[in-house]
Image 1 (cartoon, helix red, strand yellow):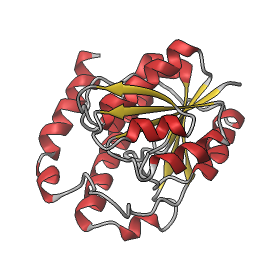
Image 2 (cartoon, rainbow, N blue to C red):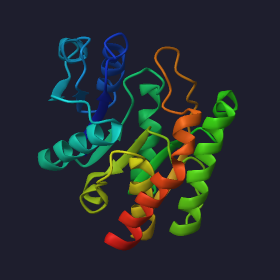
Image 3 (cartoon, helix red, strand yellow):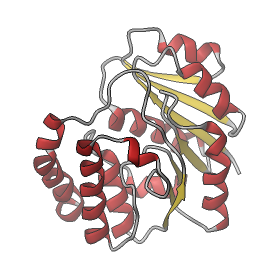
Image 4 (cartoon, rainbow, N blue to C red):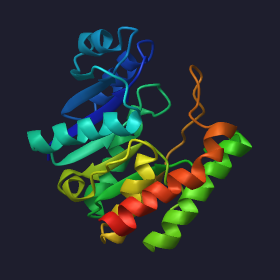
Length: 226
């Protein structure tokens, strides 16, 4: 079984090295997708032994992980671990996600913050956004998950070929809904994911106001265009 960690990174030079080191102990290869960073993220990742794919322009997390997925598909890896570069995701938890994927024959395994107390640290806006998207995916996808927006995940690479997302906004919602409606097996594992200590969260009142329009875009992509 060949495994690869995909690490989307944008200006994470202060944390990406430790993430690469931790992930490298658990998988066969670590690929950092440097999404147009200007702080030396790519150089730090290479110094720590990662394979680095660089974007000239910043595309967002959705674009970065899509590049990483395509790399994994092209290189013939069996499972893809997705882990953030900011240090929120503990690489030591990777074996639990992989073990669940293999033992339960899963296509997608999500590290959930809502199966433990992690979500209690989040702002009301962030919590409301996660619950909103999760409820929509559960209703339309016929699944029962708790944390659709979590970026700590494992995928069976063969499944990614049929559920590769197209939108860079709310990629996790689009991809999870597509996987659910396509009959792929999705499970969750409780993983504690604390709030980030550096940088800014993507959740704000402004982004919450855009949720209806972005959700409409996701639904059109999955329910109609596909």
